[in-house]
Image (tube, rainbow, N blue to C red; front, top):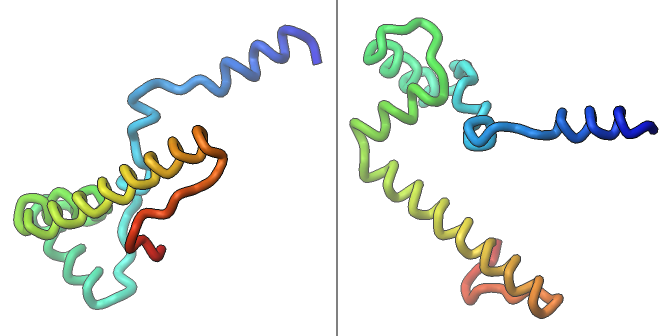
Length: 105
C-alpha cells in the first residue's frame, strides 16, 4: 500500500461531529407489526400530519405528551452508560473489571 492509499483510507474514516451524534435509527420508518406500534404510528402521524412516521417522531411525541416516561427512560440509559464508563476506567487502571453492586446484566 502506498502513502497515497493510506492517506485516502485515513480521510475516509474521518467523520464530522454531527455525524458522530446522529443516530441513524431515528430516521427509520416504523412498521406497524404490533398493536402498540400501530397506535403510536397512528398517533404520531396525526400529530405531525405525516403518513410515514419515523422513530424520531414517536420519540418527540412521547417527550412532549409523556415526559415522565421519557425522563425515566433517559435517566436509566444515562446511568447505565455512566456505570459502563466507570467500569472501563477501572479496567484501564487495574486490568480487571469491577461489577457494580446489584448490576446483574
